[in-house]
Length: 198
Image 1 (cartoon, rainbow, N blue to C red):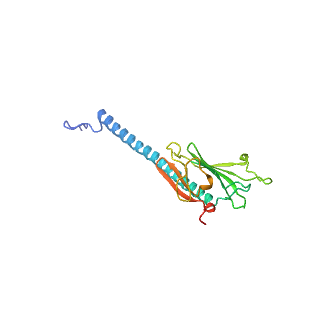
Image 2 (cartoon, helix red, strand yellow):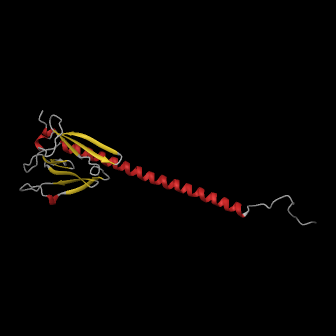
Image 3 (spheres, rainbow, N blue to C red):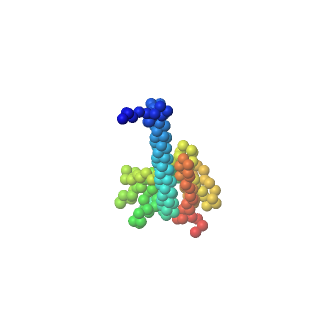
């Protein structure tokens, strides 16, 4: 019996070194492309999740401010209902926790955050002490300051925009606008307890 041997016209089975290197290079390239696609997809998902969260926070903040401004009232110390009306800050009095005592409320933008400070009055004598204030961050990622978009615009009974210095007793309507990099949330608030046409 003759030992087995390859026929003369047949190549050896398997890959040559060059073929193996080419196959390994293509496989590595495919893995790199797939990993980059997954990486980009995850970054996009994170971006859209953060953007969605920011938009939800701005809507909640607008709704909260609207509700509290509509129920504006004089302070329990006799102060006028609207204490400060500036483009990036407002201070007013409103009974936000329904305890028959008006709290002093401040909404202001600091850098890129919307913050609310609530001050409950002291008992006797009634005073609103800044040291008693509780500050909460309601929304982040705002671009109002960097884009020169006022947080608040103020209007009189004729819907005419008021300019600084603002006579607080003339304010009957407030426009609130929260600016994100790719989205603006805005609304108008009629100060019900201050309307002159009742």
